[in-house]
Image (cartoon, rainbow, N blue to C red; front, side, top):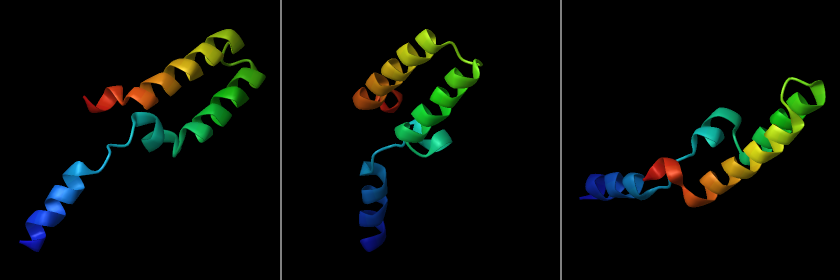
Length: 65
């Protein structure tokens, strides 16, 4: 019975976003991308829009549908 409850608890846990898996958190993602913007490897306008989009995807859990 305890094993079954444990499995249920694991399946109910929120799924980490791909961004959290890769960067650890959205804050770390933003820091990394802003560093890329500062270095000129990521366009600042595009980068800011991407950060807004990723924030929205994260809020809506689009990867966990």
